[in-house]
Amino acid sequence: MTEDDEAFVKVVDVLKEPVRIAPDLTIRVMAEIEQFPVPGAEPTPTPLRFAWARRRLTLRLSPLGALATAAGLAAVVLAGSRIAAPGETSGLQGAGEAAESMRPTQFVLVAPQAASVTVVGDFNDWNPSATPLASANGGGGGVWWVTVPLPPGRYRYAFVVDGTTWLADPEASAVEHEFGRPSSVVTIGGA
Amino acid sequence: MMRIRWESIVFGISMLLAIPPAGVRAQEPRLGGRLPEAARTQVEEILNAARADGLPTDLLVTRALEGAAKGAPSQVIVAAVVRLREELRTARAALGETASPAELSAGASALRAGATADALARLRRLRPTQPLTVPAAVLADLVATGVPVDTAISAVLVLAANAGDADYVAFRRNVQRDVALGASPSAALGVRLRAVEDLASPGQSTGTARGPRRQKP
Image (cartoon, rainbow over all chains, first blue to last red; front, side):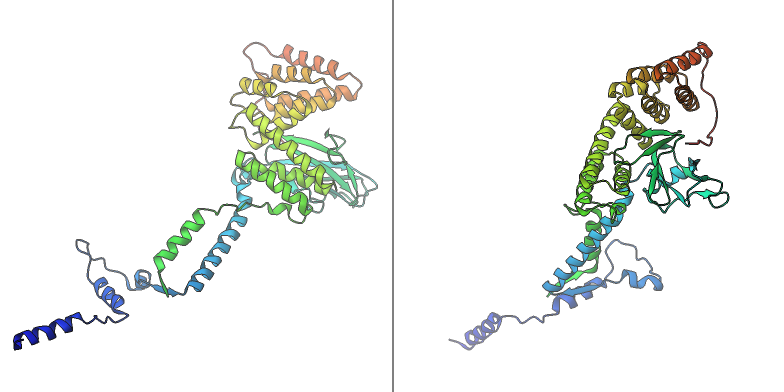
């Protein structure tokens, strides 16, 4: 084996050794590359105050952390779905449309012995405390009334006297006692 | 360690928000605390089905709340909501896909009173562009007054061509007043219908051009 051959073998041995690459080589190379302008693209001056918005961010997550993040996102989506539900079940009319076509509707009951009268119906979710009726002198006159703005539609309702006694409106059409207590119905035209 | 780019996270969140996960159903918050849990679950299922059919769910919610406010048993509430959903579905088939929730509500009332889907469809054909809320409601009210269903349907259809909402309301009020004074429902309706027909001349509308007015229930 000549000297040249020995030198050649040494070079080959060196070349056969595995190349050791620094763990952060990819990151450093990509960081260098990203500093070069994109070919063909006009350089866009970025205002200093928005520089943070264009800066690339890198998050490092362990598999466990990624799982926790995904669970958190799913919880946010679930909560969002529940909040969105009422909007999907839009009622008699959209809010804007309803506001335009509201009709003041007066509910009147003569109840001389009553200490309090409220009206419950489709327009207030049948909430006994939502719409109390007023009286001229604390009920002494016996005439109770309230005016409720309603959009066009057909509404079932009833009066609740002293919080316990349910009464249909004697001046309005009655509906069947589907739930064992009386109700009346009023129709507001226009839609 | 996994490396995740910020853009990927933003994209992922956007996709998650845009596409609701399967199995997630909207819930009606107004039912919370008002209905027993078992009834609420069943009513929510009915609402989801109605929502999928494009029916107005607010009417179903208020019917359930009415039952709850009146202290009705759960099974009665659920049955009432199911019944109303079927009536709304039939009303929409008769009145058309463009029928408003108010029209569907009134149509459902007319169906419950005994009107047929065909009668509602004929009403729509006679008044293709006018709201049917009041005519359908008057039909239901006339039947509730004691007028036979067929007679009430005929009267409402006769009025349909020319009468406005105010005319329908006045017609119903007059019939109810006559009945309250002792007339038979059929006779009262016949007299009032003839009066309307006598007033109407060919080509002249009996409808009035009144604007919105206060209505006393």
